[in-house]
Picture 1 (cartoon, rainbow, N blue to C red):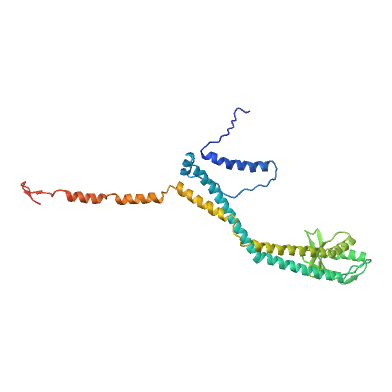
Picture 2: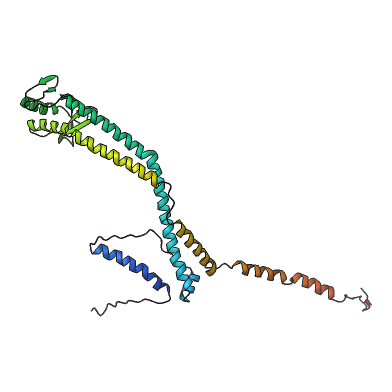
Length: 318
C-alpha cells in the first residue's frame, strides 16, 4: 500500500535463478517452521552450495538438460559423501567404545554393585530396632538415647570447617564423617562402608537420624538400579558388536551416481579441456603440417647460382 515500496516476485526460466529457487524455497520452509514455533521432524544436510562456472551458466541458459542433471548429481554425491563420512565416524566411535568406554563402565558398575552388596550386608548385621534406637558413637562416646544422639550429631557436625572430611563417629556399622560445603551453607554427613553415602543435615535433630536411616534403606534400590544399568550396558555391547563392521548402506548408490557424474563431466567438458579425440586430431595435424624451416632450405636450393663482377664490370663465373 506504500507508494514508495515495490515488491517483485520473479522466476526466470532457463537461467540459474530458476535453479536456485529450490534452495530459496527450502530455506523459507525451515524459517517458517521456526518462526511459527512448530516442532515437526526436519533435517538439513551439511552440503555446500555448488557454484557454476561460466561454461555451465552458458550451457544452462542454452537449455541443456544435462546441466540440471549434473547439478542434481553434484548435490546428491556431496550428500552421500557426508553420510558416508558420518557412517565411518560412527564405526570408529563404536570401535573405541568396545575397546575403551564399555569395559571401563562395566568395571565401574561391577565395583559399585559389589560395594552395595557389602554395605547392605553391614546394615543387615546392624538392624534398626522396631522400637527404640540402635545407638550411635560420637567422638568416642556411645549414645543410646535418640534425642541426645540427634543433638550431639548436630553439634559434632559443626566441627567441620570445609571440604576435608572430619571423622566424628559411627552408626550401624558405618563410619560417619562431616564436611561443610556450598560456601558454608550445607553440612553433609557421609556414611562410609565399602562405598560412601552422603546425607545433607537439617536443623531438626530427630529428622537428621531419620535421614541417616533412609540413606541406609535406599541401598537396595541403588543396587537394583545399578544392576539394570549393567544389564543395559552389556546389551549395548552386543548391539555394538553386531553393528561394527557393517558397510555403508548407500555405497552402491554413491558409486553409481559418482560414475554418472564423471560421465556428464566428460561429456560437458566444463573445465574447458578438450577431449582425447580432439587432442589426437590436433597432434596429427601438427605432424602433417610442413615445416617453415624446411621450406626455406628448399627455396635456397632452387635459387640459380650467384654471379660476381669485378671493378671493371667483367663477369666471373662462380
